Length: 191
Length: 158
Image (cartoon, rainbow over all chains, first blue to last red; front, side, top):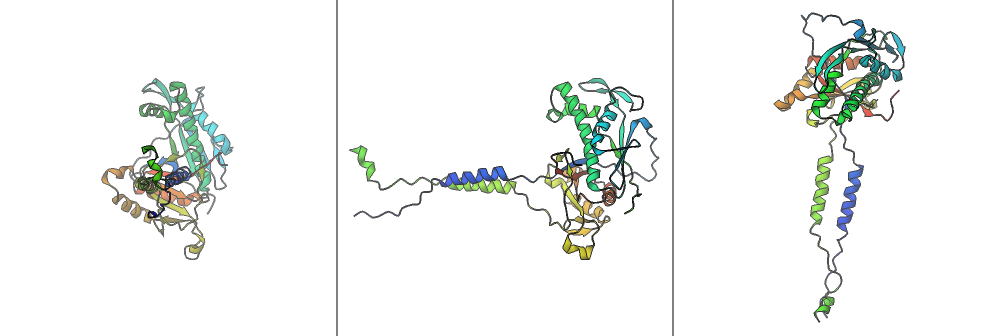
């Protein structure tokens, strides 16, 4: 009788399939952003520059890494796991110990006059030091600073450092400036 | 009577597929935005070191990469098994860094040049000697913002 219509394939569920795919990829794709430890290198020294005045011994936290990846911190051998605590104690100097760094009174926003440490961490490595070890040490030192900043942020503002507004972060950075200086490497271990 | 007229239509009514292109486009755009092209083909063995205190490098266009590591097996006959630098697609020496940085800086927009970051992607087993040489070369080239590329470690690496 009537003409037979060609049956269309039911495409109604296509959208569901597409969404399923979309959600699957949304969940599984990791955006491959590069991450790493950010550092600033010191600008090149002009050849006729005078050498800066030496820093007092108590204000320097000396970290040496040798070619066997061993640490020497303040002339004592140390394990990597202890470094973070040692660095924190050095930077913070809670008891105003005579052997730990001096503090200078400084006007800081939100905090008023605050004793800011003059301590500098000096890092020196050998030419044969493994890169992983060097990075681990850098990482531990950065962690020490980050923990101190977090603690201060928590006690003052009740938030973590990362969650603070920019000007509050700057204030905390003023109190705990990340001062890691790297000396020229020595070549003792060969290679 | 009008109530029953519908029955005459044979079979089910086809669902409109007009929105299908939208969905497909959405998918397409998503992948276009999220996929990152592989920057270079690695010629060195690279197993990144681990760290915990990482920060992300935000703008890809501001980042210049320097690869350091032992050449891969097929290049070892020509380039040896000592750690080497790779800039773009070629093996290079420390002396080439200066030109490389200048060239990369040239290709950036004027306003971005001061924000240029150099990411050092080095193998975890590289001795520090070559890394220090790279750092000195970067200092001379006035590329002072650097980043030591690393993977996120779950626990503290020992």
